[in-house]
Figure 1 (cartoon, rainbow, N blue to C red):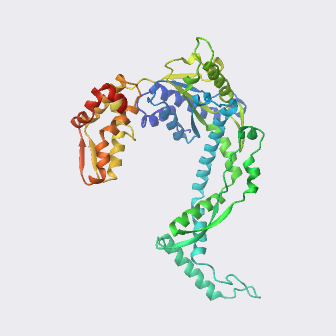
Figure 2 (cartoon, rainbow, N blue to C red):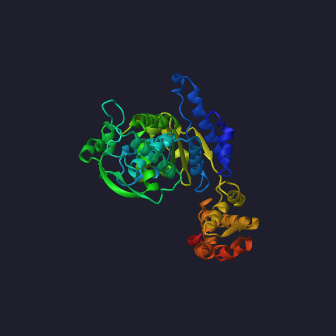
Figure 3 (cartoon, rainbow, N blue to C red):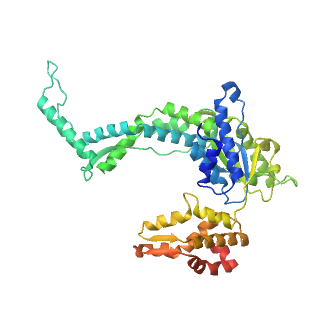
Length: 452
């Protein structure tokens, strides 16, 4: 984090998201402020609130991608939640705390995976030893000592050890991959779901653990190939090397200090100022339920209590029908930073098609190359695709950069369908090909509403 200056964060985001400089600067500063807070003395840092952000802009302009890439860049636990889902029928107020529970679960999975990677070499060694025991069982009386404390059969044991070392070499060279072994696999018991789980967790109870004794794990013998058996045994050994208490503690710490929650469709729970009745009451209720976790509260999870005081919340919405000021004042006050993301035009689409590392004009040729087809896009084809995307967005619903996906799928539909029979061919997509495939659809406005 020390090396991730705001300028460096923006530079990294530029590799995947085109434009939207204001939003990138805002998230970069918010992330740097989090690092700065962690450098303060605990008594001072405790009172520094996170600089939560509201992103305002139409769909498909990069709001979610900026937040997701930011989390990936810092290896932070990240969860995306549609705020509007809490207005659904059957919604219960405390369900908003499930956001933090899910975030903690994700953090735990991240920590667990990191621990597995750290223990990978040791787990591999232990798995190899277990597999060798299956491939070359120890002879009866191996390791037995006589009355003088000496091995009863030193020559036999020496011969077994040499054979075992030879088998280990063959295993590592892949010369035993065609063999099969019988492995004892632990089967998971039936998954039990309890209603009212949130309330139980608030009481510090986990019924699944309490009921676990009724369904002890069962084992089953399976015949597997040597590579499959080695993979399975390595996973088991890696899990045995992990201390669950340490993993739980680190997951909670990471959630509290590094967690990022992306609240999408925040505008859908904003109430219109022209009278609060009917559905507006439900929307305002969701805002009030969200308020405690955004302000900072303690949420009970099955791994322990998690404080949300320093979790970073990034809210986003189109705000076509309402304004950010239509949110309740208390919630507005917890999002001090507001940035507006601009709609995307033809020039932006050209850059999106060319510049990012995961650009579509790189993705599609790579996908079709798996069928042995060489596909390339000329510069004028890229310009033409961008022009069509901008035109359709103007004439119909503006869905931002997502329009490029629909157009590219339509453009390459025939090639994708016939790809298995076109192996070895080279295809160059130029502006004429783009016009031939798309012109009729784009000119027919009713048709383009359905197809593009």
